[in-house]
Structure formats: C-alpha cells, structure tokens
Length: 166
Length: 385
Image (cartoon, rainbow over the protein chains, first blue to last red):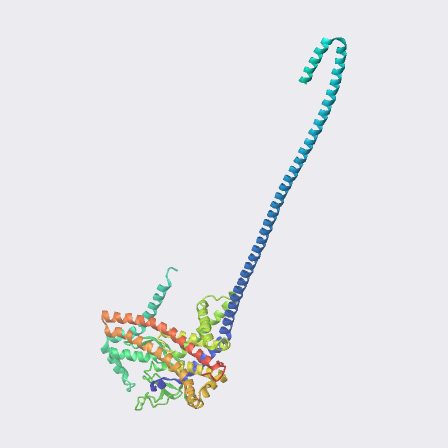
C-alpha cells in the first residue's frame, strides 16, 4: 500500500484527468452522439422494414385466403349450375319421353280409329257392292231365267262360284 | 485473401510477442557478453550518484529493467545499448512547478545520470522511483529510514512517456470514432473502413453493458463515459503489449483517475433511492438500519477503490510476469530452457491480449453497474429488502 502511494504521481494524474475529461467531452459531441444516433436510426429502419415485411406477408396471406374463398365459391357455384343443368336435362329427357309416348299412344289411337273407319267404310262398300252385285245377279238371273232354264242354272252356279272366289 | 483468420491471428500474435523480446534482448545481450567492461562502466558512473549502484549480474539487471519498465519515464527509450551507453529514443519535455515554472528537455538528465539545472535550481531523477527531486549541484539525494528521499519533490507536470501515450491514444480515439461517425453520413447509414470493426463493440457496450445494468430509461446519458472509458482502457492495455514498453493502465495514478471519475459520476447522478438505500435501508428493522448505514457508506468508497486496484494489479502483474519470463531466456541461455521460456512468453502474450480486453470490459461493466445502482428506482413497500 505504501509502495502504491509512493508510486502515485500527481502530475500524471493531472494530465490523465485533463486529457481524459477532454476526450470524453469531445467524443460525446463529435463521435458517440452521431454514432449512437446512426445506429439507432438504422435499427429503427431495420425494425420498420421487418414489421412492414411481416405486415405485407400477413396481407398476402389474407389475400390468398380471400382468393381461396372466392375460388371455392366459384367452384361451388359451378357445381350447383352443373347440377341444375343435369337436372334440367334429365327433366327434359323425361318430359320428352313422356310427351313422345303420349303422342305415340295418341297416334296409335288415331291410327286405330282410322283403321276402324277404313274398315267400316270398306265394309259398307263391300256391303253396297255385295248388295249391288246381288241385285245384278238377281237381275241377270231373272233375265236368264226368263230365257233358258238350263243356262239359268249354270249361270247361277257360275256366279255362286265367282261369289265364293270373291 | 488466402490466409484464414486463424492463421492471421497466430501471425499477428507471433509478431507482437517476438517484438516484445527486441527491447530486452538488446539490453541483455551486451550485459551477458561483456560483464567486465560493464563493471568498469558502472564504476565510472557510480561516483556521480553514490547512493545507487546498478547491479552487474544478469538477474539483477533483469530485475532492474523490469522495475524501471513498470514505472513512468521522462524520456521515450525504445531500446538501449549498455556497452556504449547509447539510448535509442527521444527526450520529452520536463515541466516542473517549483516556485515558478521550469521547462526543459529531459535530455538534460542524460537518462538520469546527470543533474539538470533550470533557473538556478538543480534537479535529479531518483533511480528508485523515477521521480524528479530538487537537489544541489552534485545531485545529492538523501534517503530517510524507509528509503524514501527527503528532498523536495516539485509538482511534476512533465510530458512523460505515459502522458505522451495518453495524448496519442486520445488523438487516435478521436480520429477513429469521428471518422466512424462521419462514415455513416457518407455511406447511407452503414459504417465503412475501420469503423466496421469498432461499431459492433460500440453496440456491444450499449446492448450488453449499459442497457442491462443501467436500464433503457437512463442508459443514454452514461453512454459517452462508458464508451470512452472502455476504448481508452482497451487501447492503453493493448499498447502496453507492444514492444514500445509502455505501462499506462498499470500505473496507479491513471487507474485512480479513472476510478474517481466513476465514483464522482455515480455520486452526482445518484437519485433519491440511492441515498435512501445507503443511509436508511428500507425493509429492515430500524436498529439494523443504523448498523447498515456506515457499511453501505464504506461500500460506496470501496467500489471505486476495487476498480482502481483491479485494473492496476492486473496490468502491472501481467507486465511483470511477462517480462520476467522473457528475462528467463537470458538467464537459462540453454537451448531447452530458453525455448521453453519463449513458448511460455508466447502463450502469456496471448493471454495478456485476452486480459487487455477483459479488464477493459470489467471496468466498464462495473462502472455501468454502479451507475445503475445510482439511478435505480425501487417500488417501496414493507416487504422490500
């Protein structure tokens, strides 16, 4: 301890204090203040950049989610439309089928009616012809009978054969 | 560059430790080669200052050299040649306040061998402590029983080796950090050049020393002091490891100045809570408070005192140990012993670089801790202790 006190030199202490305090004051003004400010500014800048990047990322995620939702909606809409179209198609086909069968039935009915009519008409005509033929035969027969008995018989036979063929 | 960082570090350390030997090697080589001649030279000198005889054996010379090295000096000697008595270096101005100013060059002392005369007064350098005393024309220095000179010791404001180094360090720091500050403006907020190396240290002191110990709120006003003291101690510690033979931070006057600044800043920026905790500790029984007050008060002085002694002792001891081991090379003078000493000195030099950083860090860190206690705000309640 005594050696330490002995080693102490007031002049060196004086210079050290003078130079060191001067150095502190000068560096504070010309170095530490601008350095720390610049470092702080830069850190602030980095922090801002990071937070804005984070924000952009979040926005991006939100946008993506929104896009996804829109896409999903569109897909659902499309599905619904497709379904509807399919239903319409099936309904149309069913309708058409029903219509067609109804029409067919109607046509068959008409055809049947027409056939009946034709048949009736033909029957009526046949009846008319048969009656006229019968009258003709009867007339001719009557005429023959009046001329020749034998030939009359022959004629009747022939006519009957004809009538059978008819 | 092809060199890796590791190999660069090794080369740099080799260079530094090799240089450290240069000074003492020069000194010792001649001592060993011509002991008889030296004895004659010593005999010739001894009549001018009979109170002090220089040792002539290698061990004594090494011891004297180390003792001389750790003290401040009035001239800047890089190395000296004992055979011819030549000293390579330059003299420094001596400024004495002894009934008026005495300003003269230290070359007047002829490296402590002669008495300097200034304005009718005679001064001589005492070999034991390296200080200047007022003497008579013959340079008589009378010692008391304890070996301390009884001569008048004038106020010595000389620009000594340490003062010159401090001045150089201050200018270097001013240049480095103002150029760093300017480089931000030039390069869009990013440091350039040497500032790239120092900027992380500045940020480290702010983020790892100031803010954790002082707190976000008050750290800014202490930053100037903490940064200055960190780099100041670091630079001086590192200069102490160069072969220039400087020992500034291992000088008690320097560490005293640094510690007293920490003490003064702590005391004068302390808030109410600091004094409250010192003199009337809350949360303890009243009789205990009376006992605690003097202990706390003593603690306030012991803290900067420990700062002063820690830095001084670490650097001082580092220099002594390193120089002693380098000195061993010249005592052994054998192939194995000297190589071993060299290896040991090399390893120690690297360790001393670590110590240089560590001591600067510890001083700054503890200063920040004391400032932190000065501005700390407690939320008092009875449960507080």
